[in-house]
Image (cartoon, rainbow, N blue to C red; front, side, top):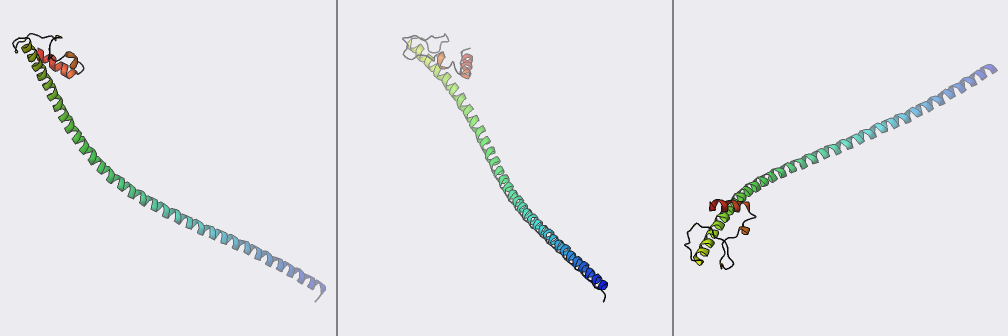
Length: 161
């Protein structure tokens, strides 16, 4: 072999060795990049699965809470309906009691006036107006006793007519 052939062979060997080294390096980088990419894809897939499981659990829990709230709302609506019914009954009972009180106040006023008439020696059923005196032992119903209650004032005014 000649010197030029040996030199050509060495150059070809160097070029082949360099090409092999560069190919190995590129292959190594591609392998690392592929592993990183594959690893990243796996990590992203795992993260997606965890997030999905969390979302599904959250939705299930919220549905359960919503159902409980709806049941509570139905119970509360029934309670409100019952309270409104009871309130209406109490309002009507209160109205009856107020009307009875007004009627009894009128009757007490009439009885007081009869007592005053009897004490003064007047006939108890006369229609003349009586005015309170300091000497009366059982004074008739004073206007100040009913002056603040408009319903009582109206009843007494209508009764005197």
